[in-house]
Length: 198
Image (cartoon, rainbow, N blue to C red; front, side, top):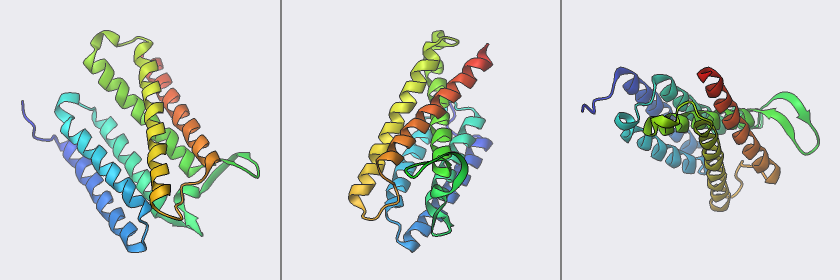
């Protein structure tokens, strides 16, 4: 079996590597060492996807969706907007109180990212266990697993808070909102997958 990357895989890989290099250089130049932790995590995830390309056979759309999630994440922490960064940009005042604001760029990226994660997990589950295709199990388990990985992401953010002073991660409400949007994204993704199967 050939391990040579397809044109799509090579294109996604070069695109992803390019923005990782650019943003890593940017984070180092401005002394944003918090995001270097995220860069290291992302490099590990990219390598994990890369070594599983042949066995997993990810569809091109999924690879591009994963790459754009990474770009949105890097841009969120790296692009300045006013006195803050893109992650804190308020997009739409769905809910606005003294304690919270919905919808922000950060929340949108969380929903999108863990929706893509649920989609990827669904792909891996149904590829490994074809008998589960078109079952509720194939929809529920990836959603729950994606929500769990979202919690792991929050643990990584907590580690960044402990390791680097003056991070831009946010407090308890931000963490809770992140978890809610992770779950919302996962549920929406699996709802879309389920509707497409009917």
